[in-house]
Length: 482
Image 1 (cartoon, rainbow, N blue to C red):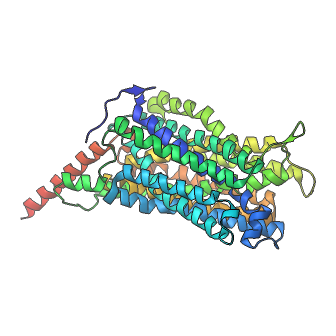
Image 2 (spheres, one colour; image 1 turned 90 degrees about the vertical axis):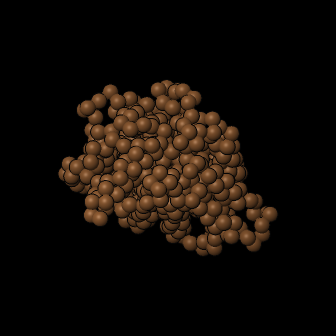
């Protein structure tokens, strides 16, 4: 495979920063929509189009949260299919371009003015969301996989690289919340979707123009086909080591359901709490509620370099992935303790509003938890997944995130039904319990990693060498039997 030799920037391959930029524009598009979708669906005009204008506020919000939950779930389900197609048919590079163009068209469908499509407003809403769901399936697992493939076996920069990559994700989300959110809430929602579509267009152009220079042939050939060509077309069953590693991916992915169930309240119940029950007025000016969601990515930008360097500086004392995951749940619980404080402040009053610092505190703790889980999980998948299933397993990682997003919508509805105190308090308990359980089984999970936490395997070349070795072993056994 032809890898580029364009040097390094800040101690990492320059290709990392191309992927950083591409992901930044895609996340600007995604989080721009995410930040306004519930607000858009509960807006009087959209409610009329959807036939919801006769509903109470609580019913309207519950419907909007259901749509958000289903959309978020499907956004994270389609990467399973997109990962398989990239592994077996089209390769990661083509998948990224297909996904980017499809998502751009989805945003433009949502941006179509109602005056242009009388009677088709609802159809265009579903068309836009559908294209975004399909496009994300092609894009999301494959760009993350390519980040891992930039690094050689035993390269301890990998976790730090994913943390830097994660900064691109969150820089994009800041752009989305500020640009898309401001245009949508202060001018018009359709213009907000248009801005998100333009952001996606910029990401596609960046990838088309610069990928060959900074990525070489990385991601061009489907990884399963590349593996088969190197092993003379022999597809061997998974070894015990590979099966154990896949078990670790699936178990730790399963735990993320609880994490995202809580974390993704940001787009749903916490977004509505900010809009309706938080004091957002500063010197007579009311801040758009969607801006508050930018607190999380702002903290990511500030803290990510610290965490990236911290893992490296700790050297042999660096906690393994399971311990980092356990810490993530602890910080998630602390964040929701802040939301419990906000709920106690407003009590049963219909007029008292919570201080904005409760939400800022919640987002701070959630950010620390996110940095202990999400980039570490992406890195973990690239370390543990067999090469021929690499993008597929990345898709599975996102699939479990999708379940968490769907669960987040259901929990969000409880905020309206039982009140924020009970709902947020329940998330606190679930977070702490999950963190404790994961910590207790950490040693078994590390055993099943078979040394991957010590820096073994997992660029495309190393995975090929491993699979060639496995094939040779199988052939030797077969010859002995014959």
